[in-house]
Image (cartoon, rainbow, N blue to C red; front, side, top):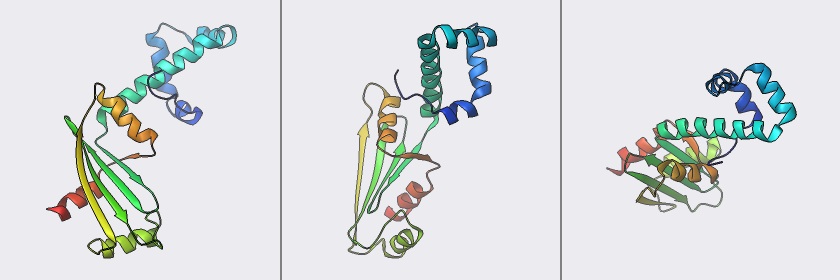
Length: 156
């Protein structure tokens, strides 16, 4: 398996797509039921292949990722050629960027001495989607990029 198996909830959400996937494998509903009962390891492999296909499709489309912790923000723009990063570090120990109050403090004080910035970019390795997935595994979530774009504007 290249990525990560979809959760039970995700698989339930993608049930129609999974049925279509099985159909492309020439597996009927009856055959799937038999497969799960008699060859559960083969059924598991089919779920893994389906999960990888879904991840591949998502990762091909993702442009922005965010990983926000108590005092750090890592905002990624995933372009065709490289991964760009805005990194923010808040040195005020009373602030938690994950809260509305903490983020409000940041918006009012983003130019203060209590906030440090770093920008970086990195070329992808051999597998662009695997590089993106590694960032997600570390806690990043897919976004529309509003926060990254806001930073881009204030940094100009």
